[in-house]
Image (cartoon, rainbow, N blue to C red):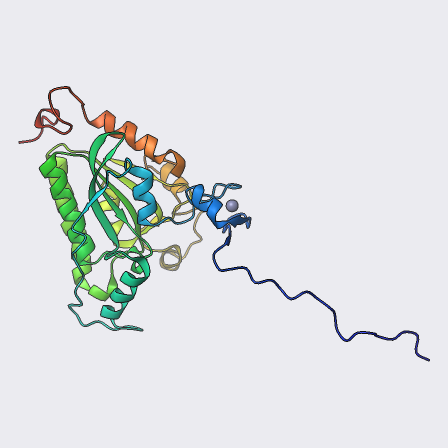
Length: 296
Ligand SMILES: [Zn+2]
């Protein structure tokens, strides 16, 4: 005897409405679904848990520099595939693709700007360009940014975001660590301040050079900051790593970072630091020689 009969075959479900790509974003930390425009308005910080999403160089320039004050220099320097390197694709193609995808020419952008009306040189790395890796051009642009700071007698700020040295340039990329460090030593000799801002992630060669050489080192909350990755360290020392290892908060506790600055407060803090280090007078422009007695 048949007690029931299925009148319809299968469940009558509504077809899933496809959302246009990139309208909603899921927070990596609290899984909150956030409207992308809202996230953008909130400087790419989750409203619910404060998780800092990655932000590109444009975002940082807009955040830090006074309106329309950023004047980029050396934007025309391009990387060269010296080693004719090929992994899953040719380095030259990788560069071309990165330029097309990001609309910028390298993993760092440098320029003159003002912050709260104080002149400064600003360099901002961009992780979206081959993982913010440091090759010859990144090193050269950082070195030249230091030169401009020396020439103008202005403070220097560098926002770091990098996976490390650019392996496609082999030893040439490693040499950038010495080059940028040596140039920053000159800045220090001339008594000019350098403020380093570490964002997620700051790892490898940049951590081993200019990123950790700041007179003041600021870090964004929860950023991964380290030289080798946690997995490599764990394998090497054969021990479990402590909770929160290599995160901003851990580094602050251990003295590697001076303070943690939420993105919303970054501009205000930078303005305060710059005004602390520079003396504005009626007669001398900002950064005039008299302000830096150490300068020869
Ligand atoms: Zn969240």
